[in-house]
Amino acid sequence: MRKVSLIQFAREVIKSSSSQCRSFSSSPSNNKLFVAGLSWSVDEKSLKEAFSSFGEVSEVRIMYDRDSGRSRGFGFVNFSREDEASSAKDAMDGKAFLGRPLKVCFALDKVQREHVTTSHGHSNRATTFIRSR
Image 1 (cartoon, one colour):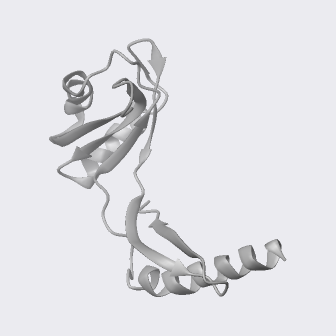
Image 2 (spheres, rainbow, N blue to C red; image 1 turned 180 degrees about the vertical axis):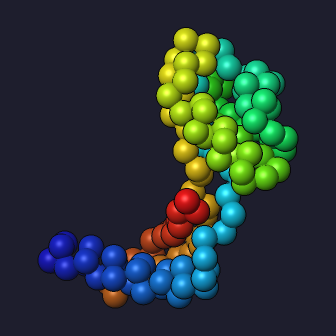
């Protein structure tokens, strides 16, 4: 009985999100990089400096734990242009930064966030992502 409800839920999520994904005829440009493997000592200024040699960095965000205030070890670097982001990704992926190897890839964009009600009346929040690259 539980499997049927999970399968039904998955079908409803796919059905509700497929129309949104089809609205993109081609991949949107992606200037945003996801950067993982950050040392706890990395701050936004030092991360921006590390990526600025590849182009104009428009924004840097490091994600922090709400309770401890400590870095969660990942963040995002936004570039003004897609080719700059691509160059930075290629050069920085696997490179050591403050003693730790970075994992750098294009960030996934949130496309849709909605409540989906299953056939059993349960409401679940479903988030759909598309890969820009």
